[in-house]
Image (cartoon, rainbow, N blue to C red; front, side, top):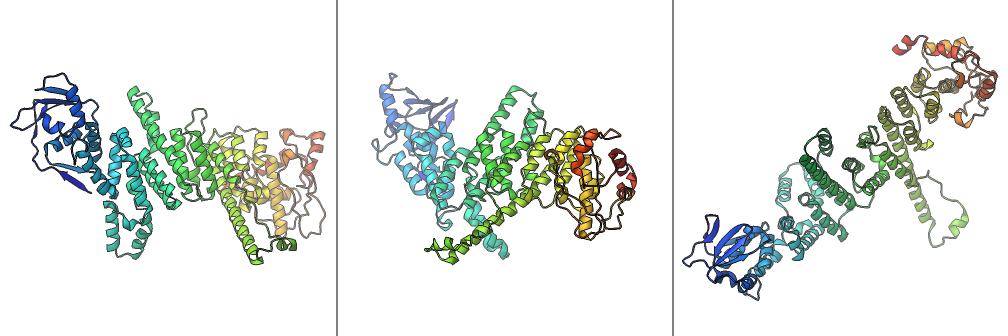
Length: 632
């Protein structure tokens, strides 16, 4: 770091009886009081360089021998005053980035200008500041940090703004033209002496962002202004801006969740502790919202994981709604990069007892689905389209369409990834006993049907939710299971669902139906089933070892019970018998199904040929050989 020495005389200031004075053969004739400290000094060296002291002494009514001058609110305190006083006496002083701001403000306060004496302190400080401080990287950062002690003075003297401009210009210029910090220089030396070529290449590629760690030492207000200046230059890649923000956030937002939990556990502490914790939370909140405002607009400039960490912090710190929406929108643009743990945002709301912030995730999903991603379309083949665009060749048109198809395919694949992500997320939040059914269903229904190639993960989530919420009635269980497509369940999931006592009876019937349809389509042989299901099928005229009969699916189903039971027929079969079932779930506990219920449930004609007493039939499905099934 650069420094400047002024003066040649030795330091003769000393303290006696709480009074600072200077060794001299001439007795002191002026008393200057600065923030509780008294100085016994001499008029001639001081007044010859300080215009303010000249005016104060001329206006004072005290005796000429011991005039008392009060300097209230002196910028920089006694340390800055002594620097100016020693300069007046010719005593050696050392100036650097650490004290130049306070010395400059003190000299401005005392009006140590050129009109009073040529080569005065203000002139010398400005020369040192312009030629050395602003040209050095570390000097500019340290000087900018010291302006926090005197913010108003530093702003008025343009010290803050000039330091920010100098730092931004160095970041925007080539790193080789900048005097780097000690930490970066050390990293470069280690890089050169390293025998590992891969490691050296990695440091070389990351050297473009060498400035991020040094800037992370700044307070948030100065950091925000500096980053705005860097971004406005338009030369720094957005991913480097994102990396810098990540470094800064990791430096200043550590263990937020732990701090908040500690605060909750100590709510009965004193008011002073509560005020202190509230002040810390406010600072963190301001810091977080400032980081959010600095995020680059380009997609992918920061990782989805980092955005979700910021969102978790925003939720804990109760940041503004605009910051949360901004983060949720950005997460939605690259949601396919997220993991389940990233989406598990702990709830801090006192209005509900839910474990996780499901509403925030719903907002993220809505933003993701708003991206207008559509399946790829083929290019138009009309000759008129080509003829109307004579200025562009057929090759260019074909290239544009290929790019469009590639982009659409990527969007389509991202939906497939997000569908898997949401289903696994549902499995985690389903364990929350306070999660309302409506929120669970709404989350599941945000994913379009084509994005779920199979429903195994969704079935697991439904099964977990049913176990965690045994109080659900039949209608609620029916509502929950409407989001499940039995055609998209694997054989293992079908085997589990067929024996799941928590599922509505109609779902179990559909599972059996589609399993038999799959077996028939695969070659007429029923897949391996637990012994109790085999016994049930055999008891009602279905031989698991032989071809099944054709399965009629021509019946209509009411919208309330529409669980996708269409489109499965045996490809080749010589039999023409139809399996029938008469089921009335609303009267499940009755031994005989009323005629009106039988008539109304005739829409299930063709699912299974089971007797008209479903309760007795399905009692064989669950209790029979239950132990053997669980062992399997």
